[in-house]
Length: 259
Image (cartoon, rainbow, N blue to C red; front, side):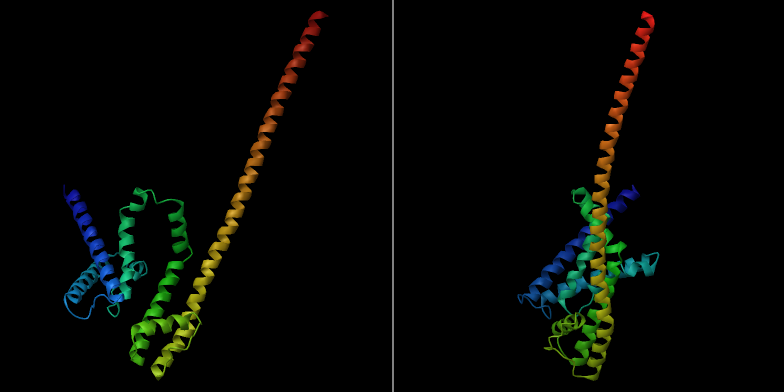
């Protein structure tokens, strides 16, 4: 009875988490589209209450985690979603929804789990892509926050600067003017570009290896078919030989009787 009540409570809590996450998505989207403002009024109150809920949720899960170290990386997107500087970070809360979907095996229940999800999991975790992506995002986001603070610029411009700098595009429309901005730019060039390079090489290596594995699989299938075909031919020849041997034995027996 207690176990059933516990399951119901977890289910209701999961529904609440998903509902609030989707609500925050709606608020963030409307704010980015300029339809509402999150700096004042009832939308700000609702936005802050939802943020407070997810902050408490994160802290409780962190406290209950057996290994704090193993908790941080898989839940890094949840932590990024708690950055209150800009509504764009709210969309990282999709990771919280995905964790609930995985917990209840909803993809499997709707027939969506299979080769695609296994390949996605292999790509994200077995190659270490999720860890490189998480570190790269942390570098970009915190570089943007520090840059915006030094340069007294908006976070939108700072994010644009961080992405264009880390990807070596460097349009030059946003440039550091203060000493602090120049220092963080140098750090981003040295660290961010390295991690983004590792990201692209990981993606390339994965698909290259996958193509090789597919070629090996196709070759193995062809060899298997050829072996099966040869086995059938050998079996057929063995049957024919047995028939000939039995026919010869019968013929020799008849000739022996005539004598």
